[in-house]
Image (cartoon, rainbow over all chains, first blue to last red; front, side):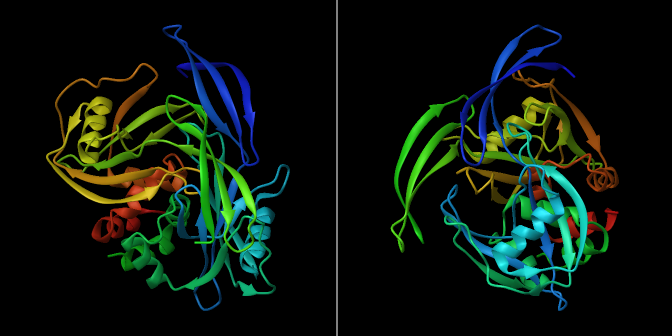
Length: 185
Length: 185
C-alpha cells in the first residue's frame, strides 16, 4: 500500500455520518495529506420479489438531489445488527412487505473515494404484504410493484438510476441479470 | 413535493466538496428539519474500449475504504467544463489513452440521499495509448487492460465493485449489457 494512515480526527458528528479528517503519508515520498472522509454505518437493500415475479420498490423524495427516486427498499444497518435482519426490518418498515427466502448477493463500497461504508445487497423471494408501512418522520415514500419489463424500461429511460439499485441488479448475477439485460433497450 | 427547501448554509468548504446544512419544511405538517448535505461537482467515467475489445481500467488506491479498487477511468468535471471533454481529459491523464468515438449513455446521482451531484457515463471506442499518464499528487494508480470475460469474472468475485463502475455498465444498454450479462456467473 502506497499510503499509510497516521491519524483520524473527528471534525463533526451528524445524525447520518461523522466527518473525519484522515492524515495520510505517502510511504515512498514522505508527502503528507489531510483528507476529508465521511464515516458512517453500512447500508443494505433488497431485490424483493412477490410470488408473481413483481419487484417491491419505493418511490421516495431524496433531499440530496431534491428529486423523487424509484429505488429498491433498504436502509442503514444499526451497529451490531445482523445485516439480513436489518434489511428485512427496513423492507417491512418502508413497504409493509415480508419475504420468506433471502439470499446475500454481495456488497459494494458506498463510495470508496471518501466514504468507509458498504452497501450490502440481497435477493428475497415470496414476499407478501403483512402490515402498514411505518415511516420515519422525514421519510416520504410510497410502494410501487414493478414488473421486470417495467424496471428495464425505467432503467433505460433513467427513471430508475440510484447507483445502489443498479449495483444490486448487477450483483444478482447469472440468469437473473441475463434475463433482465434482455429487456433493456 | 412534500418538502420545501428554506435555506442552505455553508458549514465547511473542503477541496472535493462543500458541507451544507439544508433547512427544509414539510409542506403538510409544517415540521422543520436541518439536514447535512455534501455538495460538489459532477463526475464522469467511461467504458473505454480498444479496437481489440479490451476495456481500459485503472487499479487505484482509494482512501475512503483504504483498499485498492479496479474502476473505469474518470474524475470530476470542472465548473463550466464540457462533460465529454472533462472525461476525455481524465482518461488521458489517468491512463494515457485517447478514444476516437464517444457516446453519452446517461447519468446517475452520486448518492441522492445526501449529495447533489451526478456521475455521467460514456462509452468510447477505438482507444489507443498516446502518452504517459499524468497523475495528481495523491493519485496512485496503474492501467489494466481487461477483457469482457475478465471483467465479468471480476464483478462476480467482487474484485470490481465500485457502484459507479457498475452503474455505467448497466447504463450501456442493449446488446452491450446483454452480451456482458451472459458472461456473469
